[in-house]
Length: 261
Image (cartoon, rainbow, N blue to C red; front, side, top):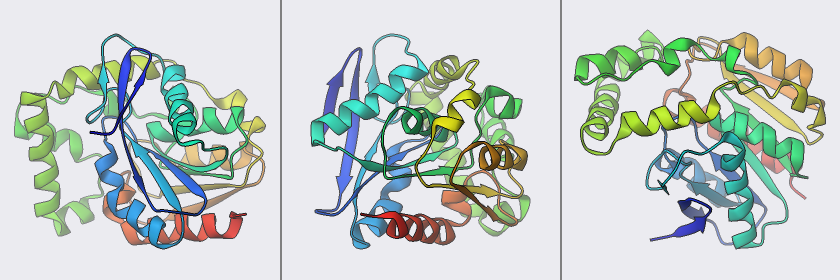
C-alpha cells in the first residue's frame, strides 16, 4: 500500500500520469482521495501528473494524536518532497481549498483552483459541522444540505448510495470520531490575511446554490486574491464533483492548460 510516514501519521496517496506538470488535489471535510479518481484520470489524459491523498482524518490515512490545520498543509510538502515536486498546480475543494490557500501563500505554485470554499470559519454554515447521527435518516437529513433538491431527486440512487456508505463508515470505521478530529483542526481558521500573498493565477469555482459555503465567500475570495477569476456554476450545490463533474473537470483542465509551462 502506498503510505508515507510523517510526524504522527501515515499518509495514503495515489498518483496518476507518467509525465507533464504536477497537479495536487486536496479534498474536503471527511472526503477521501477516492472522489478524485475520475478527475485524476481526465487530467492524466490531458498530459498532467496528479497527486492525490487522504487528509488526516479521512480515508486510509492513519493518525495517532490530534493534529492542526498547519500540519495538514505540511503533509502536502512532505508528499512533494517524496516525489521531488518543485512546482505544482493545487486544486482544493471545501476544507481542502482552505489548506490550498495556506500552501499558495507560502509556496511558489503553478496555479490555484479553489472549489466550493471560503477563507474563514465564519464562511462555513454550522450545518456542515453538525453530528452525522446514527441512522440512515440522520445521515440523509445531513446530506440533503450538500446537494440541490433537483439533483437529489434526479439522482436518487447515487445519493442513497452515498448516504449508506457514510452510515457504514459511522458504524464500522470511526467516521464520526475522525470527522470531529478534522473539525477540531479547522476550529477558528481564518486565512483572510493570507489571500493577498497569493500571487499565482487563481480560478475560483462555486455553485450558485451552495448551502454549506455560501456564494458570498467565493466573491470575497475573488476580490481578495490578486490574479483571481470567478466561475459560478448555476443551479449547483456544494458537492460539484458529483453534481457537475464534467463542467468541473473541463474548467480545471482548461485552467491548467492555459497556465502550464
